[in-house]
Image (tube, rainbow, N blue to C red; front, side, top):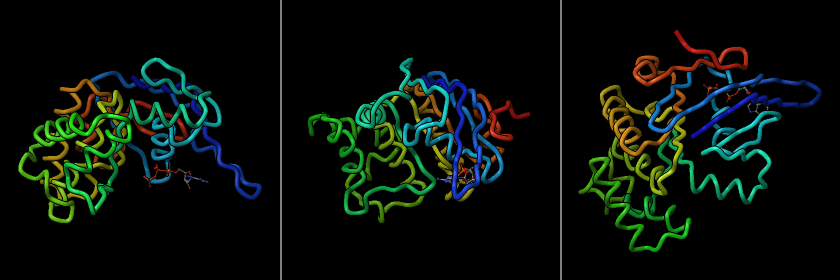
Length: 223
Ligand SMILES: Nc1ncnc2c1ncn2[C@@H]1O[C@H](COP(=O)(O)OP(=O)(O)OP(=O)(O)O)[C@@H](O)[C@H]1O
């Protein structure tokens, strides 16, 4: 699903060189949840941006569904990102002037799915996250946990093979975080999506299939 190999990311600014990633190796398989932990500034977001094709590594290969995408031009990278990768962030980033359903329909229409089909898929996803009754509500009328569940449904709208999540429950109270996490786990398993989830919550991290820790620019199995 996702294969990262020899990933190096160097930032150069005004004569100083910062090697944030120094040879990261990582494989995420279908239906597998991998937690990404490490102190603030360790390079978790940088790695997620590279895995999500939002940024290019200084060196190394990124394979999505078996395809090495590092050499692709921006247009092809965008295409792979739209088709194969879903994103969930700490803050839901739903479009406020659209309903929950429309927020799930839009990314499908951008990908060329006919509106009728996109609506049907949106309703299925709303059902999957337990929000059948909330499709016509705008984000402001939903609770934090509900907003985040819509964001998860939106991330899955185009049936991605990889889900990338950056602190998906970081903005929620513990009870709601638990609920959203359980839902995320169930959906990843059911849809056979590979998920890479950065989190500061070690308790949740330890319930994923593997916990990888960012240490000195490399990933090591967390114990
Ligand atoms: N565009 C950039 N230019 C220069 N340095 C950068 C850039 N982006 C990130 N960095 C640096 O790379 C390091 C890693 O940042 P990153 O955001 O990946 O850490 P993180 O592990 O996600 O932290 P947090 O848990 O706080 O979100 C930091 O020292 C940061 O300042």
